[in-house]
Length: 205
Length: 205
Image 1 (cartoon, rainbow over the protein chains, first blue to last red):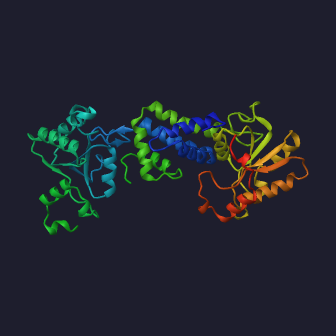
Image 2: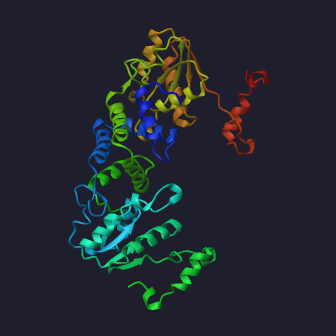
Image 3: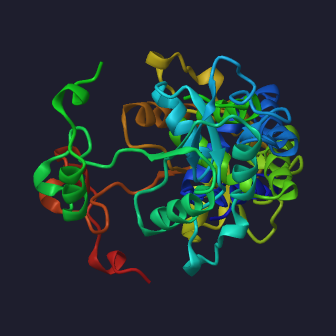
């Protein structure tokens, strides 16, 4: 693409570095911003730079935070004795969006995946064990992706936690709401039969 | 969507203001930027703010420019006596991408559209007439969208230019390369028959 302005060319190239944004979309976004006033564009740029420069990670649960402790850990209305272990920040946002969970989180920062060179020592597992040792934790809920790496991570952490008297659970796996039985994979269907529920538990309260 | 950081929330909201970017895509972009180092994110934000603050519009053709005159107008290798009249900056970039046009441009900044409240006085038509009066212009090529508004604009400008001895042309309209005759609309097909070309002109040289 040919531009008659290097300022525009730079901005397009910067946008095109973002995932899922090609040169044409980048140009569309840049031309949109050119039509906005300077203050609007200033706010856009500043919000992004400020976020990156000032973002903190919660010292307790490793979630994104504006202070040393994130707003979820600092909220006394939430059950501090309940910890949901997730892979990353996005999972926290996804679970929070359901508005059904009222405990705290622990962000591992990844899952054990030897093929990708991710071992237990790169994850926030030590701090989870410390947290359980120090705090009055009643239950750990694993909400990891249902695959081999997720299961390996659960197995590893569960071994580490065995000496401690803490209840360990994992989110239910089964047929998705609205999913067709016919298209479910065999492993999911088999597990979902093995872990069948009494009908009174099934109907949401 | 629930965020535990107002910094991230602000950045997501700013991204979501861009056309075609929803909250989920905005979050994906923000989480991507969070993984980059501060310098990279700084470059991204600065490029956009700098572009908006420092962009200029060519005093001659109203194209985007880094200086008072754009790089196309300043280029002595281009035919300065040839002016291609386009609706907006994007059209300049599109035509430049073909690498087939070697003249200059004149950006109208819109087309005449009474329904949208755009009249001739809001467009850069006066400066086009001045340009033709002052410079040795040989030919004006209209490259406007082939619709009623485009045709109205061409008609209006052509009337204004009638006293001046300048050749006025418009880009060819016809069946697109690779287009199917069967699916062409009647107006395009009728015009394309009326403006038929000798075969020797058709084969590209």
